[in-house]
Length: 412
Image 1 (spheres, rainbow, N blue to C red):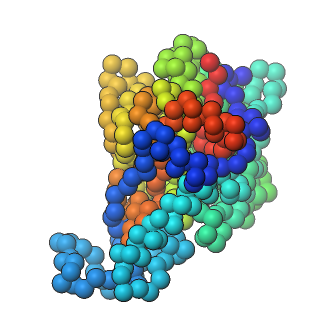
Image 2 (image 1 turned 90 degrees about the vertical axis):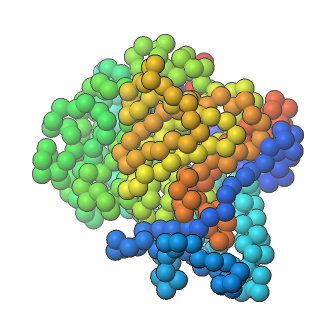
Image 3 (image 1 turned 60 degrees about the vertical axis):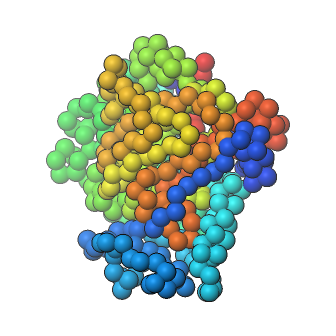
């Protein structure tokens, strides 16, 4: 069994309230900050559109268009949450401020933790001799990107997007059976693993497609340690874009090389981005339903960035740097580097270590600004790293800490 232990049910209590998080900001001297920009999403055809437009705009004399700005005749696409739509007003910037505050209030109120179908939950194996056995279903699901949007027709492993987090140890024998409950065929690929060819999961190349109602069992030895993924590899633009994705983490066999021992990390966080169904998402949710990462001052955390989308996303953390220690499961060693903005291309995985030494609530977002904020405030690929001092951490523990699906405690 792996050294990583899943969160206990006692952690799943009330979300951080706005009052408690703002009080935390006052205690620590921090605040949630972000940059005002325009939102965009890909249209069904290869044409980029920007939006949404407010119901009332400043006159052309007041705001000069920038060079290369998109045509005003192009209608916005559906990736923007219509719940952010401003009301008609003679003061569009006043609308912007009010709408931006309202969406931040929802985030600070713990919207993400309130939604059903939390993904990234650790999946415990059963044992068949010395083989770790994982049984998963492939399901059509209804999934909410945020609390005010209508549920979307999505897909999930075991009914969730992202699917369950699978943790094993280098050298483990793995048997993973997927039962297809969809109305179409599929195949599953363990991205980043060194597999027998017959287990590679590409229909018509290494296997027949898994038909509706059928199952396929993948058996292999976990040879490649590090941060990896499992996802559909059949009609993948649609199936992965609608949620058939999950994290497959292989801990090093040498316990001294695991992040808890190597860096003293106490949180191990999976961060999967996507940019198809529902627009720009982190772990299947768009701001304000993304959930903040909460750490105590002085704590060290690890984030495993995984890009399951179609676009590159540069992740930017305010307030403190990230130490980049691995790419695609391979430790960087002496090539490790420090940055505050890290570009993650489709299919890539990057592991970063953060020493949480600056108290406050720090914005953490994609720095392609059209993926993060528009005329109605922040949306899409935005969350926050909340660093609290010991007193604030104790107060939150007494009040009941939130359960965040992307966080797995690491045993000491």
